[in-house]
Image 1 (cartoon, rainbow, N blue to C red):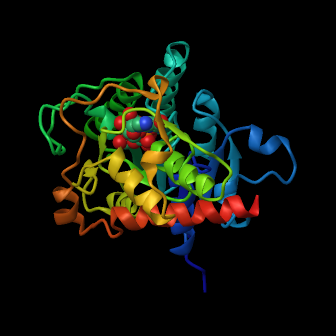
Image 2 (cartoon, protein in one colour):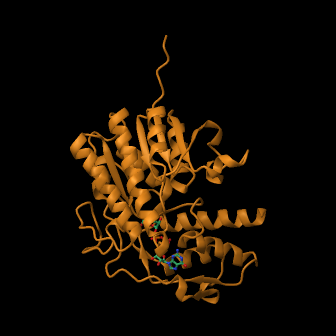
Image 3 (tube, rainbow, N blue to C red):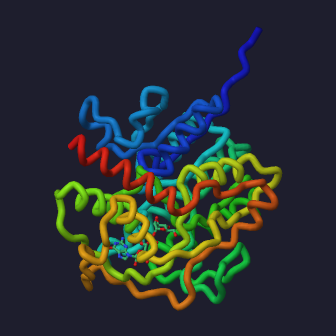
Length: 329
Ligand code: GDD
């Protein structure tokens, strides 16, 4: 009897929050999982990206980067994946002026290189691009859906919107199953500490343990639609398994302020945030005239997806994890 071949998935950006959860999910449902990691992860023997510590031994690893388009093409040709999840790229919305060319070029050329290689070597491969609410940017309405006009307000958002159009073009012109998830903010214990949720949960934990006295923040009236990263991985997976290639908004539909976040995080450790938060202009960003809140009814209706974890539970889980991490350190 011939054993049935495993489905093969290729993930870019696998060492990040989303990539690492996705790798675990795909392994758990029987995939052969291939990950593209930057060269520096291969330079020191035994160095394991922290987010991949659970799945690392089960993964097939490839050194590559968005800038090395020939390398990406070679990886696609070697792996011949059934599904390709393109999550790599700059993820902080504020891009320093000097880095604008790299951020823009790497996302555009990396997305194009993957799709061109899929078209040439493995046209049946399904392709997912991690898009962002920042593609929509200055929204004419709230909440935003798949039909909301896009007017990015950042080079980051512009680069994601360009990637979105490359994927759409490959779908329409070459019949590739290529989709973009318009992802709103999604958080977890694996979130990077430069993002406001983790900055606050880590800060609350450090203040509780007496390791830090104050926490400097920017605009605490800013509104975001914060969901749970593993839920968003479920949405991404469903999009790739769909009957037809379609782009979807992935969001909770509920907007909260950074103040709400502070209430929950500091409430978890029984501390009054007003006694510790310092507002610093260097962290300030302009507030959107119309808040970025997503309308995910299309994916709920068509793919049966739902956000499962309430905001307060996400933040509490992150604070508890940060307390444990700091106590171990
Ligand atoms: N990072 C940060 N640091 N943000 C702060 C701070 C601070 O000290 N103070 C206030 N904020 C506000 C920001 O102005 C923003 O309105 C909000 O907190 C969230 O900021 P981030 O956590 O940095 O996330 P983001 O919304 O800019 O971007 C994230 O979500 C996008 C999808 O909606 C990232 O994950 C992007 O990669 C993603 O595309």
